[in-house]
Amino acid sequence: MDAFSYVRPADVAEAVRAGGASDARYIGGGTNLLDLMKGNVERAGTLVDLTKLPLADVTPIDGGGVRIGALVRNSDLASHAEVRKRYPLLSAALLNGASQQLRNMATVGGNLMQRTRCHYFTDIGFAACNKRKPGSGCAAIGGFNRQHAILGASPSCIATNPSDMNVALAALEAVVRVQGPNGERRIAFEDFHRLPGDTPERDTNLAPGELITSIDLPANGFAAHWHYLKVRDRASFAFALVAVAAALDIDDAGTVRDARIALGGVAHKPWRARETEKQLIGKRLDADLLATAANAAVADAKPHRDNAFKMKLAPAAIVRATRIAGGLA
Image (tube, rainbow, N blue to C red; front, top):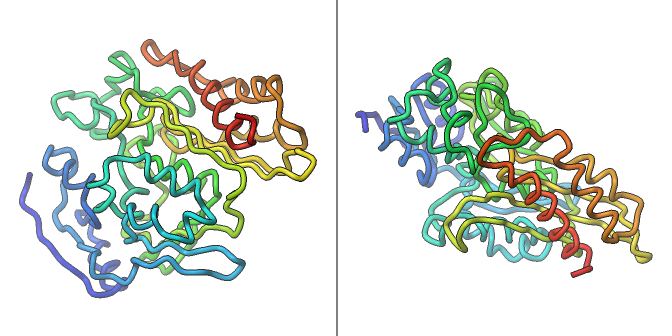
């Protein structure tokens, strides 16, 4: 790890000023950034420690939603009474991530910013990684790519977003609030993370120096009909091969009024299965409908040598998660 400077600002304005330097990095729990720095994947001239900022509360907002401060710890959010009651999908997703020890340290803002666990990115012994070194190539495309993307990838990068929390936030249509040198702005969750395109080194649409201050959740948390399913190689501390956040609004007659299906483990960002949602809305759930709608989620997928199994696994996971959410299992 290279030498770096360290500052601990007392308020958000001071943090944004310090974070505006081109070599500065914000740090909350440090569960991802510090590992990458130790491995010489990330380098920072200055670490801006955010832990003294007043961003660690969960509070109500106008419209009936809640605001989650960027420094709320993952374990605290997962066990928060209001979140468990109104947004159980988010609580379940958080509890499926990492380990208890890491959840005790990791922050919500840091979780949004965590980087891919592609082994070609995290191991500098591999020279070709466009995310780590733009223009160097993508070793994963011709290498071992079992964990990698089948949707939204590009010839520059086939890495996946590793976060469970992000999948639930995509389904809940959260809004990310950020503060930067030019003031505050709100970013719809679907627009926060990027697909790789020709610039896979950019994971988000944050402008330089912008700091995540909170995440807003809308009033509807789909608390009655939801399920989070994570398919992985082992029962704990493993990243998803495929994850599904399923949230349904079902009327008394059993008709789906609204559907949210988000996938993890399949793309560079949390992936909304919009065509699947469209096919579910206005209908009653049954086996034929679920199978057809789930297959629509991978209609445009482009698998690689070692991850073609996700073409069957993803639809099967969607069917299972949606059946459970809809009370059919």
